[in-house]
Length: 529
Image 1: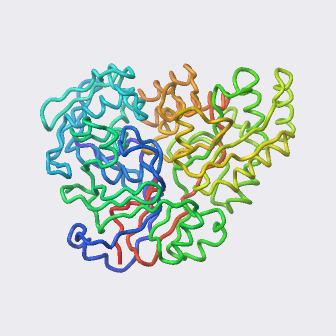
Image 2: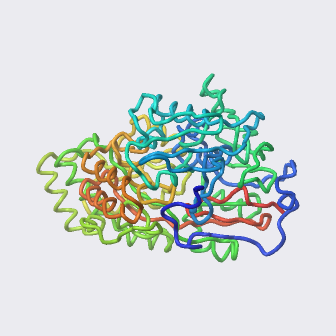
Image 3: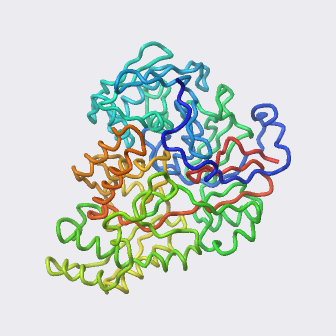
């Protein structure tokens, strides 16, 4: 039985955030692919944090590009449904295993994509403790730094996956970048390969001009379901979102997936039917490291609660975001099946100045707080206004010095977060990799997870997550996942702020612009006029 759709499908059409024009698409679409010209689709992006290695990419700058130049076993359509890409079939085998059969496919250099390209890549990610290693924890024999015993190559087109326990939704996760294969040449020099990777996806990397742009063009060897319908994508790295929006209005940018806060009240009028403002699987938070001064132990628990209670989420989302954000009631997203807005302990996310002061005073009795409370953010992401508003709310409520700590770009911020050299709190968030509640929990708060930026660890949380993953289906897992969230509401490894709408738009020079369930445009479908 071929894998057809995820165990947790989003509501039919609920997140097909389309901007599809009525006119005919371009000739390249009629021909089944790009014509090899240079009429590129201009899209916004940001400098990737790392070389373009799928298993070491967990941020959006690199992720936008990696998802176009690589193909995995499955992919997600605009609604979050799962379809086969390189997989011909993914068949259950035994109590907790799968047999994967590949379709015929080639790398951009003309060599065949083989089962060993997957198995070797997955093992490398784990053996070298790359950022995506945590995603392989369900596979039998997982131990960071060691080969995965649960993987076996049967032949060039077949490999098997043995899990440590049955996990019904495991196949639906396989569209995430960490599960992409790697060309055999990658292992010769990983850094060099990441600067100029060999592709097996709909596009291949043509140029990467650091801190300026990255150009991808159609990969002629790719014949899968995401075949490019344009001449290529030029990712322009903007220092400010306002500049990107100005370029969109003037016709110097074709697609923008993040409207700046300065335009929230006007962009729908200015863009008309080319504007999008819809819910998406996106979550915003601030994180305070577990070892930060004054934020560990009993004192830290009190201060985390006090900070959360001191933030006026309702006022900030109304004033700064003009209705394009919704105050958070949990750690996931309301667009996902199983989401709850009535978790035990969720009152810690409600603005209560008196309770915030009381909690802070209790912490002060343990040890006086000295210095400033800072929130680090990337200035190129349009975050200054809300960071200023959050720090003002904290300052006015608690009577402490609170201020923003601006980094010039996302890469610089992520480098300090990854290297654990950052002081104070820092902005964090999550744009879903696959449409399941668990994707917002394990990768961010599981012990040792690659995106666990605050180094949080709670065995009770880990056990509940493992139990949920072993459930028959996602419906059966919901109770355990929400119980795990109630632990997070006590510990506050991150402080949830709000859920983000997708706010974006396109120019008059492109058609067939569709924004997916997780905010990302389906780039391969876009046609240039």
